[in-house]
Image 1 (spheres, rainbow, N blue to C red):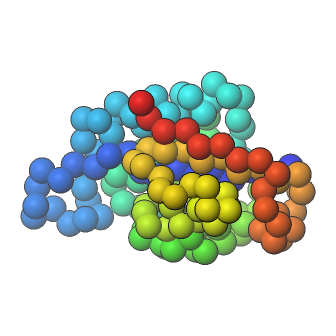
Image 2: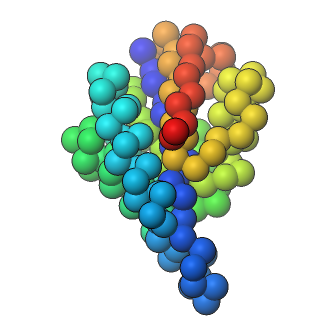
Length: 156
């Protein structure tokens, strides 16, 4: 079985207009939502083999909460910052494990989630978690066929 979890980073802080986009931290809501959504995923019994994250502060911080909840170290990848959906999927595939969490940004996250859900997911709000499951144990096969199931969870 192959599993892909897409996590859009939690809500970021726009309080300092001079701060580089890459360096924006999470705001109060993001700091609340990230550990909650990570715990919700962990409570489902989901087990990750790898967690990949953009190097942006807001994504890395979000990923850190998921890593803590799932007991998996976070692997930061520069190419996930602002990446299109195809790059996000390729990063998961190239990791070479069955169950991957990818934490990154829009519009790439929403585009990939929309493609994998046959358009049912139109937009991933901040800190949304989309889980896609394929019955196949091979990423090459999984990436060529629709997932056998998917679910979307969003913060309340």
